[in-house]
Length: 192
Image: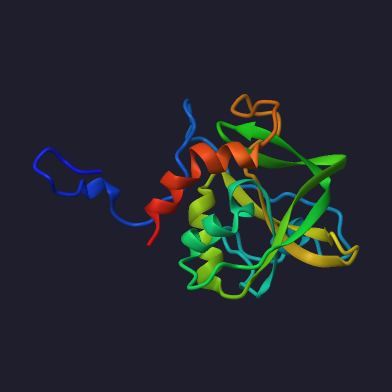
């Protein structure tokens, strides 16, 4: 955005996450969401780690849903030199609700959410994704079933950090084509 004198608005500098939906409350607390997997659960890991600490980052597969399913958005957010190749997949034990225009993954026994998988190789990439997702989301462990039928265990995804019954969430679904048409251009322009 430019000011009347033609200079860039200083508030537009640097990467920032997606815009907050209206009526965002700042009381969202970080929580660990336990998901049934064959690997060690985040809640169990958290018990052995000092409070406010996370386990060290290790390269892993990430389940992406919502805006990050779009490879161009993922490329822009992470500053990747080439368009990333994502693979279709899904996670069980979750469903989504809407937080403004963005989906929020919440635990739901018997639920299944479709999305894509991409390998996060560095802590810098993980931290950029965390920044993009904002403190409204936290990461959790999941298993991804790829469209090929293969199952990847011990993966990560971003889940809603608050209560799944929060009044900030509404029933609905994420329409990727609508997002790409109306919102993607402004998000992609924010990132170098």
